Image (cartoon, rainbow, N blue to C red):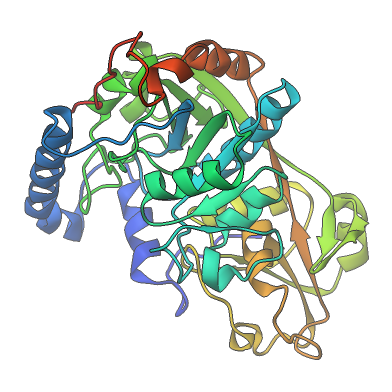
Length: 381
């Protein structure tokens, strides 16, 4: 398998931008975007300052809040990390709930619960993966409102994990975890000339002392980020591939080696509608599979037309793609569809660090009780 060097017709502007962002230097058309990056930085800085000064209201919850998110655009692994943290915390006796915006869904305004079999067009794709952990999951554009609704529906919840909320400043938080992968911070520029939503100086002001988790490990990390890791505790994470399972039938599973043997000599096409499609394609190649790669935009809403011309092919896809394709009428359009789940393997001390940071936070957040720990400020630029 060789990754295509030129964009395919399916390859949109977002994917071309992402490739350019993660090159070492700013070049080409990106140079023309630097004035917009300066404007974006100024606007986001004013917004953050308004929260820090109390001009915009930060909403505190009666339970600790841990925010997991990215400083960069594009998939770095925050959703697998949130899944793994939820499982680890529950195994240690905590009762976490998860809130998310629900990107890719249509019902983002009013908070709503996410059932494992919910329609991804309504709640988004990543919340369905989070719901598979078995913990309560609610989505909504206003993460604070979603968290309040979750706590009302599940009053035994003693901890909120917020998936992708570093920039959602209205929700008060006790600990922030920033996730990167081996691409680091790309060219180091703010949007739209680079991939950064926030400046790297934000790492010095992560709530609760913060943490940086690097998907793929800190060894070999791109230099644009490496110099900042001494400012905040760092932890490694890896993504481990599981067994493939048939689309819509998790009980029908095959080990990667068995599937590779079964598909040898046949036409295989790999779909990836995630933040970093190349990561999925690299994983498949490492598992011994030969295939044609097809990258789609992140949160792509699949239709049967995406499978046109594949009647002689078997399709491989990520779990995130699978939840959006499981209800499509694909009979006769493909030979079969197999989904590859991945699980985040966390540094052994990360969960202990999270528990240490949130221990004793609840009383300070409970309405009517004195702020025995003071009022934590909003992270500053």
